[in-house]
Image (tube, rainbow, N blue to C red; front, side, top):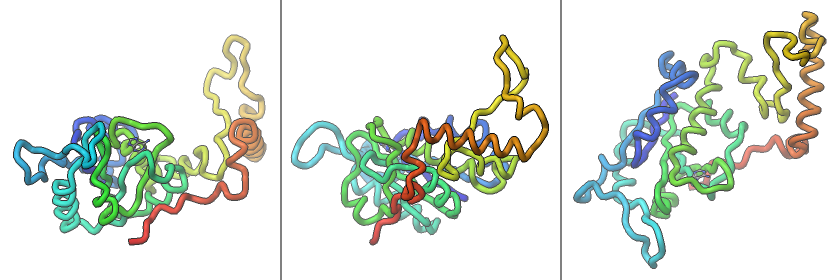
Length: 237
Ligand code: ADE
């Protein structure tokens, strides 16, 4: 899977994909992440990519010319399945959307900065708009890192234990059960006996009950019937 990320601060994204599971995914050739500097695509002097908003107001807006120049140049090389814009007014990202996107071949992610991007780019090029939560970041880069991490780790073959991602929280609308490792007792705090007995059926039952208990206590909304629905990601064009 290939993910191209268009940004004015590519340096900000060097770190998140160079370690741990993301690094492994890239080293195994299962995930290719390319950081593309919007400034390389501006036809304007002094590598200008932003300008004041029409109508006045605070903040700068990423201009249509460099964005369209970049998108069309990249599109000529890669047939994108989705062109995603990271924005706080997008559909809230969740595991269902991550699962769906992990099956795609090629994604382009556009990171806004300052006040956002010229609306005409959203109207004419963007196919999906994603928010990672109801708060405003200074740019879409950290949000893009979250989305790419969530997608990358569930690409088949990335995690060494094939079933590992399937037992994550949210995969079956349940939070994950508690986990423990050695020692079995620390300061008198004991690991539940059932986990030490070696009876796999009983362990599975215990984990399922704990997942239900935890979800009921912390996120009862996940157990409601329509919690399985992903927000409709693709816009009609
Ligand atoms: N850009 C700024 N804030 C954001 C958010 N919450 N989600 C996605 N992109 C953003």
